[in-house]
Length: 220
Image (cartoon, rainbow, N blue to C red; front, side, top):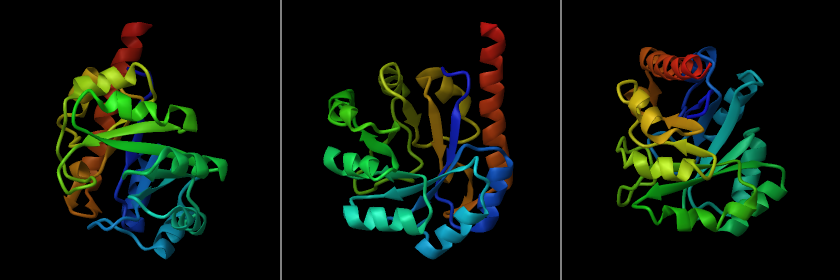
C-alpha cells in the first residue's frame, strides 16, 4: 500500500458538504454530471469549485457524454479532472488529456479480464484507473463491493483508485487487501442520497490515516 492514500469523496451536491470535506483535508471531490440522485447543475458545481481551496482537486464525473459536452462543462465548472465512468473510448480519454485535463478512467469490475480492458487506455496518459463494482443497469454509487484481490492485482501495475461500497467500517480492510493509490467514497458517507454525513466523512478519513500511519511506522 502507498504511504499516503489519496481520498476522493464523490457525489457532492452542495456547498456545506464540500466545505466539510475540504476541512478534513481530502484530496479530491467528485461532482456527478450524469443522471443520478447526486447529479449537480453546472452552475452550482462552478460556485462550489470557486470556494474550495486550491489543494482540493475538482473532479467531474461523466458517463458516456459527448466529448464537446465534457470539455464545455469541465471549463464551465472549473474542473481539474474528468472521470470517465462509462464506455468512453481511448480516443475520448486522449482528447481530454490533449485539452489539458487530467483523466480518471473508471471501470466496473466483473472479473480478472479487467486488465485487458485497462490495457486499451495505458497509452492515453490517464492519471489513474478507478475500479468500481459492477451492478447491472447502474453506473456507480451502488454501495456494492467487489473482489479486492482483483483490485490488488491491478494496483501492482497501475495507479489505482478503489471504489465500490467503501465506508468507515471496511476501508481499513480494503486498504490492506487492495493496496490502492487512492480510494473513492460516496454512499458510504451519506445520511441520505446526495447528502454527506460530517461524522461519517470524518471517521472515513481517520480510518485511512490511522492505517497509513501504522504502515509508515512499521516500514520505518
